[in-house]
Image (cartoon, rainbow, N blue to C red; front, side, top):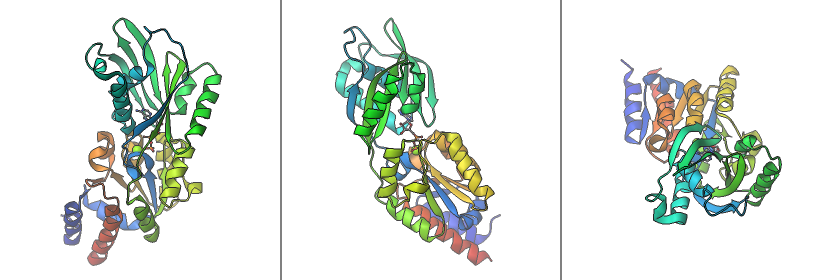
Length: 308
Ligand code: ADP
Ligand code: MG
């Protein structure tokens, strides 16, 4: 069995909403020297609202498929925090018809971690391939003008998360969404610094939206990483571990899962996490109070000190 102080630390953490899955984590937490912090759903609440919708291709015939509806059909299959906002925007626009009259069928749905989601959507007899996600989905668009149109749209919404909707290889919509920064995100950044666990933001989102959150939470944007693929997050953790800076990784998404799995201490964001993230983690935050994490590091330092 684990030493008594370790068992007590696990119990004390649990009553404060932090689930430590195995005793070794109590021993590892005090030695953490770097902390990779995911942005969306971690430093932010991951509660998005669609602020703007821009239509890029005008004048489609009335019988044509509504790109917002197509995007929402795909997002209904996704568990990403962005998906609920796009679905409710579509429901708000088309009302009951969305749920009743012609329910969309989605085939070949695929999550594109760190990018978006895709699927083949059919309404009645019509079928289209639909891609929803960040600028990377434009790689599937042949027209080079689409990239500059979307880049312009992004420049108009520098603090927001921007999403493109590509239908049958054509850029149809741009959406700007805003998220809410957690009220104690800045506090946990400050405390991680004080504990010698150098915090860095690792996000799949674009640089402009990422910098905004970095600055607001007291992170140095010049040491943060943007537009990261899941394997980039994994590689960052590996690099820290290899250079003698045991890493903590805090995240919520399927795009964080491999980084969570290899980090000395992987921490998933509780109830809102993707199941894959929670399964890959050593600890699960069952609370949205981010500060519980730095408190937990102090608690484990104390437990390890008692045992020595
Ligand atoms: P983070 O690393 O900050 O948690 P994610 O990797 O989850 O962010 O997402 C990165 C970006 O990928 C989002 O900002 C968004 O632009 C895009 N994205 C990911 N999943 C989706 C989705 N289901 N729908 C639309 N966009 C998505
Ligand atoms: Mg996330």
